Amino acid sequence: MNSNNLVPGSICPKSGEYNVVARNGRIVGTVNVSKGDRMPPTQSKDDHFELA
Image (cartoon, rainbow, N blue to C red; front, side, top):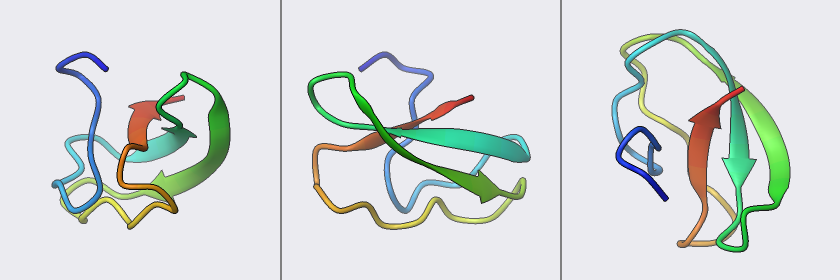
């Protein structure tokens, strides 16, 4: 995970579609989030978000 990745609960810096990425780097889903909203919870605490 690099510094540009977002974790659940963080503030979304840019509206768009985000991939939900598992610890192993596999994309496990996508979400649409608006700028200023909080990133949603994920199924695993090790998942993070990357702008698609």
